[in-house]
Every structure is written in structure tokens, then in C-alpha cells.
Length: 86
Image (cartoon, rainbow, N blue to C red; front, top):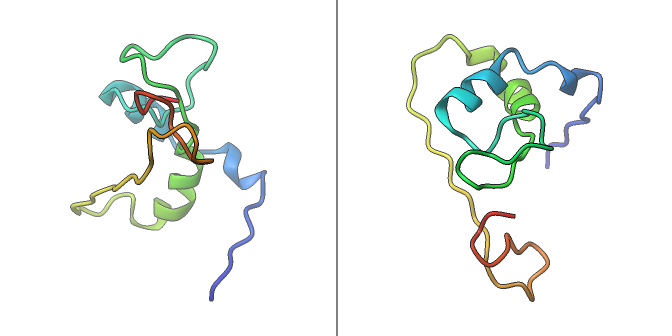
């Protein structure tokens, strides 16, 4: 199994992905989380992590699909809330 150490200093730069996420209406941007997302979704801060993983191919043309697996069952620890937004 491969492991990767996430240095917090490396995660502070996201190479503008947060702007792309904001402009496209993603819930994954790093905008000021004290303000509600226009869609009503909860914010996540995935831009720094995505930048770390994909920076080496950032200028390549590719098709990418993200599959999020979660539950709306509040009894389960990884629940996203009743409407899948928290």
C-alpha cells in the first residue's frame, strides 16, 4: 500500500482551483465559509488537495468523473445530513 504525507504548507496553495470551483458553482471551493453557498450546499475545502494530486496534469486535456459516495442516514458516522448537504 502506498502512503502520502500531506504537508500543511503544501496544501495552502491551490493554484486557482478555488476560483474555478466558485465560478462553476461547485461545493468544493475554499471561499469564505461564513457566507452560504448560493446553491445552499455546504462548502468543502478540496481545492488544495485536488491541486496536490492533479497539478502535474493541470494543462492536459482529459475527461474526469468524480464519484462521491455518501449517505443521508444520520445514524451513520459519514452521513451528509438529511438532504446530502452537510
